[in-house]
Length: 353
Image 1 (cartoon, rainbow, N blue to C red):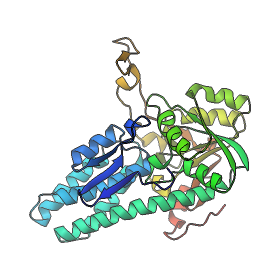
Image 2 (cartoon, rainbow, N blue to C red):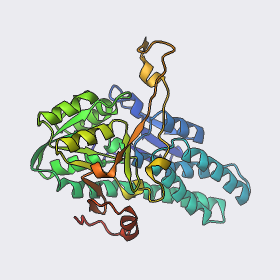
Image 3 (cartoon, rainbow, N blue to C red):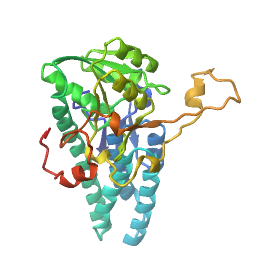
């Protein structure tokens, strides 16, 4: 994958192009969204997923709302765009980047007083978000690569690669950057039940790049830590509050096991994933549909009438995190998130340890 774009604006079609992640690894398919309804479906079905990618999608979604609005007066136009922006923002509740991307582009639209100028401004701002995301991922990779020994085996969970961003990746971006530096990195990727983002997506990405990757069942990670087959854990994040890291369900379990076995647990995420306002208890954990667990193809795996809980994310307490790798450097305990966000300037990309 490396620098292959996974989500972009199609100028000719006037819509959003993206790699449909639900069809991988069996089929590489590029889909097109030209309506807000289709974009929301793509987000909710996880055709587009991953916190930074959702931020890009949110930004492009507002640009799409502006481009397709039929409002004839600027007041009607703004009412239409605001309504569609809110629908996009609330289409998934846990990842903070989606709302961040929506709000950033919407704020740019609100600075204008003319419909065509607002459309141009929205698309320009959305493209900036996508470009910045790629630069952020490379900066995260460069900073994080220094944390890894010259020869190591890294456990990762879910997919925090190019597919979860505009390109390169966060956790996988660190691994890619380490490999580019000549480090011998092997990756153990958990399958990540129930939708197998590790088995389907992380394995597909890393295999395409020629990076050594092996898939394990989610419940095997503790055994592999116990038998000294893993040197570090590297994951992405969907939201980082002052007291917790929210990531794909199962991440907390890996963090607990890593602490017990004295293995570093690293989180790689851009500052757009940080939430300085809320605490863990205030964040809604998305719970998805029964069929993701109960049905596999044409087979029923759970008897009818037996209830299912299907949380999409969990919260890892900050005391279990060894370091957070951002585009502005490596943050270590104690994690002063407010100070980090207030002191990180737009041109400050140094890896300050």
